[in-house]
Length: 329
Image (cartoon, rainbow, N blue to C red; front, side, top):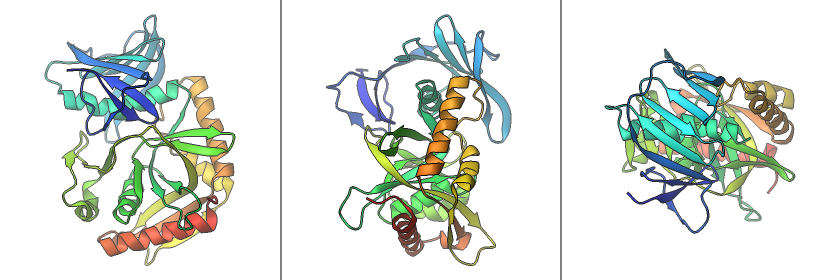
């Protein structure tokens, strides 16, 4: 297969395999990352030799572990017995190797999620467990502002983002939010093409009838709602969603910076880093976001996530929160 360029989290990624459902980007510019995915061979089951930079549980419900280590050849990310990604010292070249019997789709999904989160962290970016959308500016004075839905597993990040998109917002990213503090504010990078919904959110998925979808490694429904991206968007509002069976109505309440900081501290995309410089970037970015970006707690009854009218009502309330509490356009 010929090499093609894809847009992911502000990076141009040149790969010798398709990274679908990401859109192919213009290949006129030099790539930020070059990926070779042709290697097939046994992947060891144990921890790689080298200095451990990060160690993670494989998923929320099992005990299997994967590692990122530094060694003489650069860095190695290993999912034991499945796939490993060799990263060069220059942070520009990545070579995959997958065990016989492990599908290319499996390795591709791990790359787009876990591997990209680690690569961004190594490159000096803060990465949070968050879904993001872009709301238009109703005054038409600006280009709109990004809204980040943040929280722990099951908080409703993807559900809120999906409802927002169903009511007209632009999809930016799901599960992984790359944050870039700059002199003029805090910016985020749109990155992935899919939004993943738990099976309990099947009613929300029905709002996207006809949208390409697939089942993920962790048995979620992934909807293709975007195409990746190179652009940066100004972050205007943090939303910490809470889906509740007890709540009778939607409630929105502003959070003080200290409260937002505590919640952000519980939302790293990768919680197993041991490398000090990565932790320092995450902490400094957390403090900057909490102090500069308005934040709200948004509680929504589960019964309000079942139809298009609820999606439209939710987006109206998110927009009201954006333009009441958020950064001006």
